[in-house]
Length: 89
Image (cartoon, rainbow, N blue to C red; front, side, top):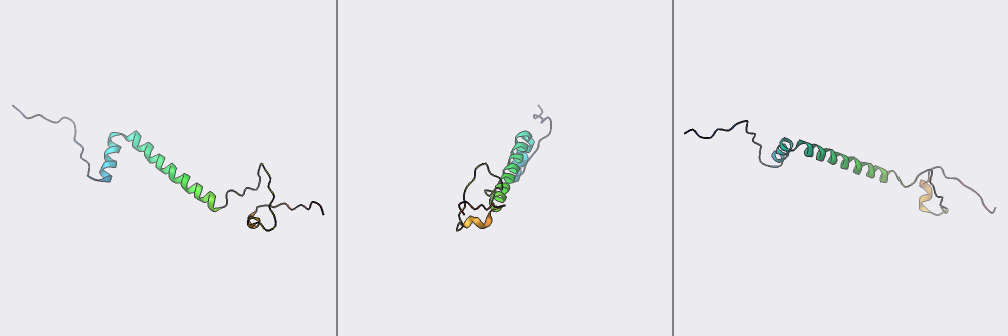
């Protein structure tokens, strides 16, 4: 009697994190590709939020509501396009 024969090819992967990633790409490429694109999207979103906060993104030039900034307010120096009016003078 002959021993059983393997049909097809056998793919062996390394042990560790890289081997796990390679095996995942071999067995479920759609899920691994979508996961990779999701990680890239999370990275872009994090960088975008960081840049938004660093450049004072809350200080928009055109707003739907108006607010009054007094002369001694610390945000006075960072306003874009301030409009000065003199009421009651």
